[in-house]
Length: 179
Image 1 (cartoon, helix red, strand yellow):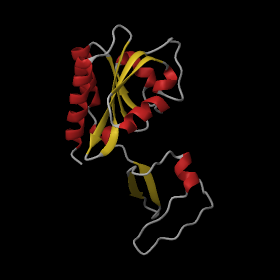
Image 2 (cartoon, rainbow, N blue to C red):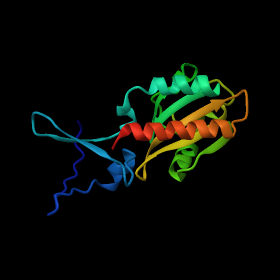
Image 3 (cartoon, rainbow, N blue to C red):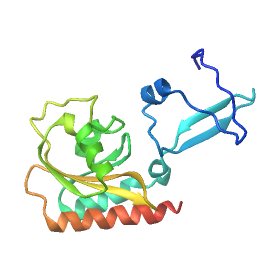
Image 4 (tube, rainbow, N blue to C red):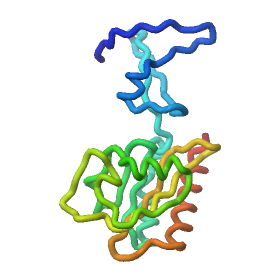
């Protein structure tokens, strides 16, 4: 752990303000959920919480979606790619790109045609010319945006069938989270 030199008081409701520069650097936005840990030295640690990551069996959703739609599949939380089809495994763990994040924040299912690596993630490039079409469906639970189901195809345009299936999958994931 590194020291920041920043000291904050706890107010009478038990709240502590995380300074803007730390929130910006750590990409903590309003409404993000933080997990609180206390170690044996009574050190309090705050960590961004990803309920989608905690779900665990994301690969089974991906396998089913691949079989049903004949598309490559990605499941993310609001910041990172958590799990992918085997053909896209190099993207796993990378930070989402601004186009995908904007779609997730819009809470609507949208398609990015002729998607590039930077549309999907900010910190990774492949030798592929493009990812084809990306269909991005946000996972929303009780008004909170938790992540996304993303379908990718270079073989076909993604249409109503794929939209319906990805929306159903996002709803199932949302229900499984049981927050």
